[in-house]
Amino acid sequence: MGGHRNGPLFPTVSNAIKSDSPLPHSTSRFTAWLERGPAPIFVITAVVAAFCTYFSMYAFRKPFAAAKFQGETLWGTAIGLKTAIVVSQIIGYALSKYIGIKFCSEITPGRRARTLVFLILWAELALVAFGLVPNGWKVFPIFLNGLPLGMVWGLVVWYLEGRRTSDVLLVGLSCSFIVSSGIVKDVGRAMMEGAVATWWQQVPLIGPWIGSHLGKVSEGWMPAITGLHFLPVFLGSVWLLNQLPRPNARDEEERSKRVPMKGSDRLAFVREFLFGMTMLCIAYLFLTAYRDFRDTYQVEIMDDLGYPYAKFKAIITKAETLVMFGVMAALALLYFVRDNRRGLQATYAIMIVGVLLLGGATALFQAKLIPGFWWMTLTGLGAYLTYVPYNSVLFDRTIASTRATATAVFAIYLADAIGYTGSVGVQLFKDVAWKTSSRLAFFQSFTWVMCAVGTLCLFASAIYFERRSQQAAAAGNAVASR
Image 1: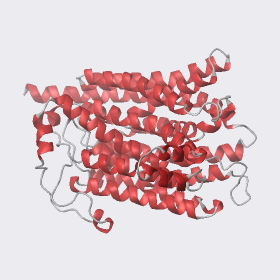
Image 2 (image 1 turned 135 degrees about the horizontal axis):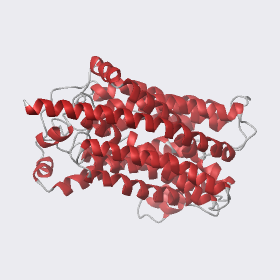
Image 3 (image 1 turned 180 degrees about the vertical axis):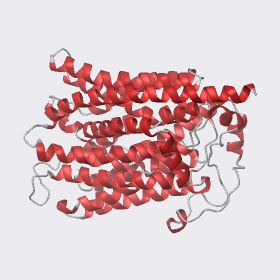
Image 4 (image 1 turned 45 degrees about the horizontal axis):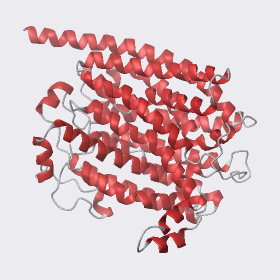
C-alpha cells in the first residue's frame, strides 16, 4: 500500500492533511525492485520500516512515564500529579482512537505518509509546551500530545494488512510497542541522570557542545528532548514504509481485498458480528487498562519489588526484551498456518494461554516461588500474548476467515477506543478508591480480575467466530459447486 511519489513526501504541515490528489501507484525503482524481488527481502524491509516507525512514535508518547513527580498532587486534590498527567494523555489518546474509527478507516493511500509526519510534529510541539508550563498545568499539553498519537498505529497497519505475509509483518510491528516503552523510559531516566549528556560528549564535532547544554534534564523537559532524539529515525522510517508495494492479486485472493470503509460499511460489520465483537471489546477494555497500568507504573512497581534504578538501570528494557522474543516466537508460528479458519483458532489459543499465564505467574509469585523480576516478565508475556493479536493478526484472520467486507484497521480502532476508555477509569479508580494501597498491591489484585474476565470473554468469542467461519466456508463451497 502507499508508495506514492509525485511531489515531495513531506509537504508543508498546512497541506499535509488536506492534500488528497489521485496519485498513481509508485514508480520508484526501489518499490519496483521489492515487487519483483524475493519475498524475504520484502518482509524484512516492511518489518524494519514498520517497527522503526512505531518504535520512534513511542519516544513522543511514553518517556514522561519515567518521571515520578514525587509527592505532587493536582491542584491540591487527592489525585497524584503523575496520575493526572497519565489520565490526561490517555483521554487524548482514547479520543484519538474514536476519531481514528472514521479517519483511519477512510484515509486514502496518498495521504498516509504525510499524515504520519504531521501527527508526530504535532505531538512534539505539545511536549515542548509540556516543558514550558508549570507542573499543575502540564495536564493540558499532555492531552494535546496524546490526541494525534492514537492514529499512528492505524496508518502503519494500512501498509501491512491484507497480505499473505501479514501475520509476520503485523507481529514484527507489534514487537515495537513491547520493547519501545521500556527502552524510551530507560532513555528518559538516563536523560534525567545526565547519562545521555555524557554520551554526547564522546561524539565528535557537535557532541561536546550538545552534551554541555544537556546536562541533567528536568522532568518537565525530558519528554520533548527524548522525542527530538528519535525524530530523524521516525522520518526515515516513514519514507521507507511509503516505498512498500501494494498487495498483489494473490494477496487479495487469499486474504480478501482491503479498501477504505464508509460509515455504512462500518455499521454493517458491527451488526453482523455484534456478539463476537462485544465479547472481544469487553475483554480488551480490561486488557488495555491492565497493560497500560503495568506499562505506566512499571518504574514504581519495580522499585517496590526491590529493583531501584540506581542499581538496576536497564531492568525494564531487559524484561520487555524477553517478553518481545517470547511473543514474537509464539505469534510468528501463525504464518505457517495457511488456512484462515485454523489460523483464527490458533490465534485464540495463544490469547487464552496469555490470560491464564497472568493467573499462573501471580500464584507462583504470591507463593514466593519466583522473584519479582520474573513475575513482572511473565505478566508482561501473558498480557502481550493476548494484547498483540488484537492489534495485529486477530482481526486480519477474522476478516479472511469469515470473508467479511471490512478492514483490520477499523476493527482495531473500534476495540482500541473502548479499551482506552476503560484505561482512564482504572487510573482514577486506583487513586480515589484504592488510594491507601500501593500500585504493586493494586496491580496484583487487578491481575486476578484480568485473568477471570479475559478467559470467559475470549472463550465465548472464539466459539462464536468459529461458527461464523464454518458458515462462511459452507457458503463458499456451495458457490464453488454450482
